[in-house]
Length: 284
Image (cartoon, rainbow, N blue to C red; front, side, top):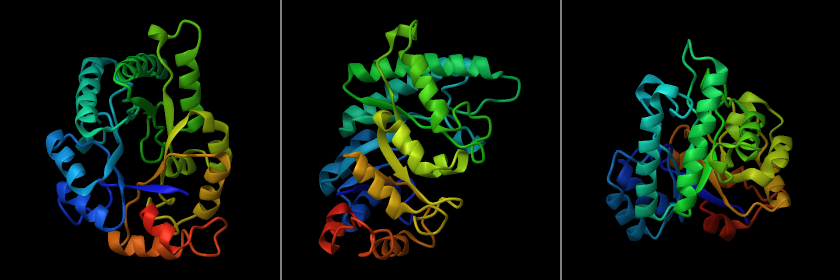
């Protein structure tokens, strides 16, 4: 059965961040994730996890100056030291919270930086991060960012991300880096490339985490063009055993969006849909 994790950077934002853990648990979620948790000490996050009995399944490496539109710094040659410090910070948070998966956002290529330089920097940084994560028993995943929301990202699609990972594993790979994987965010895949289920199947051997939101508004599944009943069935068919992150912007509220998901995404006539009790155990 699909297990859902609540992305606390997007859901339950009606409450302060540390109060969202209890709100998610009350809504039935045993699994949580977030974007960048670094605004609060990891000891406080760990306290909330213990208090609620929830598990933190994934979060991202530091994303740079998000208020300026940055979406990571991994492709920026002049920010390599910052990236490396960010990996260390993320690993300290992973250790403190018991999280076993970190996500690397590629960043956006600024005017004047050619694609080759950005690609080579990204390759070196992902190799470094994968090596450091492997030392701590943590998986590193790379998430592509679509060109509509993140213009200039050197990894706009899953196909680009797979090429990066092939370069990482190929002859002469920097540092003989351990294999990283893919964070498959279906919203970004749809916006960048479309054909989501075929791309999921093609990349499945490298997929370490899945996130869902509808397109084009990044609201809850059922508000846009994607057939998430079909996609969840495909995940089951492929044998995916990880969590599916609910990483959407709720419309109009988190509570109302979850009510809609309970009645639509896993409606009784959806192939393979669990019964009501199963929905509750899944966090829906």
